[in-house]
Amino acid sequence: MRQSLFDTLMHAPWGGPALLDGALVLDAFAGTGALGLEALSRGAARAVFIDNDDHALAALRRNIDACRAADRAQAIRADVLQPPRGTPQTLVFLDPPYGAGLVGRAVATLRAAGWIAAGTLIIAESSRLEEVQDDGKLAQKVHGAAQMTVWRESDGAG
Image (tube, rainbow, N blue to C red; front, top):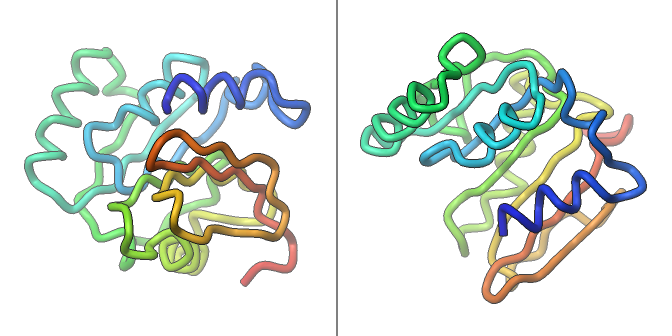
């Protein structure tokens, strides 16, 4: 799924290498940080990772060190549904647990906390059975039990 996601970001008419070059990335429900770290390896300027699981955060911090990205990465222990205040990011990756309907709720809380603004590109991975964002959808791909949905936050959101 990650390879397909980054292929889409690199080759879609609305994407391309400039999309990641200098990007500010939020990897929410970060787990081991694979999406944010991949974005950093492809030219993103900075990545913030949010997760509330201590074991995942320990693995994430090891991965940040292994990628020599400590100067461009910040790991935050927080619930994505009750995030700390942030600043608008260029790209937001969401990979919540499947089947809990968390994508829409996470977008709302991250928007309210300042992480998402008009123009932010949001990439969500969810169960293919979950309904995710219809307005402004740029891409949607299904891979087995998972789906990836990409959209750009509109001016009218919120």
